[in-house]
Image (cartoon, rainbow, N blue to C red; front, top):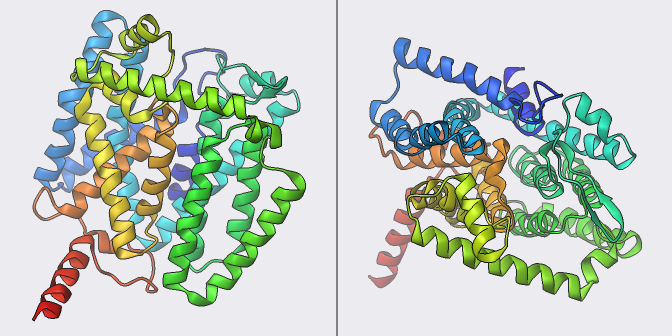
Length: 423
């Protein structure tokens, strides 16, 4: 039950004091309790010291420093984001411990799925004119963005912005792929997830999350060919039915949103310029600027309020080091996905999250701060940077249908095969 609740709250992130614009969220409160639990575990049970200090030194050198800078300079957003990165460490460790055990791992995954479905429910309420109600109930931010496209209201959901809300909903795709491919659950999970993705895209008129989800699905299809050839027919049939539905009903947000050439070109041009501007500023200020100063510099130099890239945004706010570490962690897990051809949960999440981060500043969202921290921690445990890790990634491998070879095992196998062929 605890695993399910943690998964649910991670994506269905309630606002604790609804009438305040800047209020703690559910993940903040849970993070404080998890931090106390982590400290108790360190004192009573003990943790691998080198692994523990690798994690805490990273947090201490970067985010505690920025929390202090934010406090001294009265930079509220920098302070809040720094604290959330600090609280993400116990969150990541708790998720790692949960995912070591099959039953608790599946409960956590179900929590993620139902939490994303709850996000769609909130989007639906706002779509039908109940935005104020969702704000009063703590289901949406008081300062949620108000935006329109072609005269249609884009619902901001639980995360303050349509793009952020759609990105969180899209997490049902890697979760459903894992459940179907690794846990041998019915294909209906994937079909329902596609329905949630369609509704999320329709309510928010967001394209990027849908595009990334399609890419994740295609790679999942390729994995299904490798793992279960009999499953391929079902996947192709589902792809055909989805194609027919899109042809008849239209894509999320309608054909105009997707086929308006001028809108697409302007959007791509704007994103490219803001990416280049953010990268240039990050190189000029490798130690970071803080959220407030970074925003002022972006506006002053390029008239842009957003970087449209989570990695560049993190580098600009907190420095290149934490951004590079998060990027490298995801790249390693994505490479492992293709080498092992195994639908491990963290591999699929890394693939999907990496794609999402190329479009928006998702590290403003506690959900993705926690997710990035978890993927980083998995890499630490896998490569045993602290000597004897708490557990190998093999214990995270989902089912017996997947060969329990680690990332390094596959490299050694390929090298052995190559040497034999040469001989």
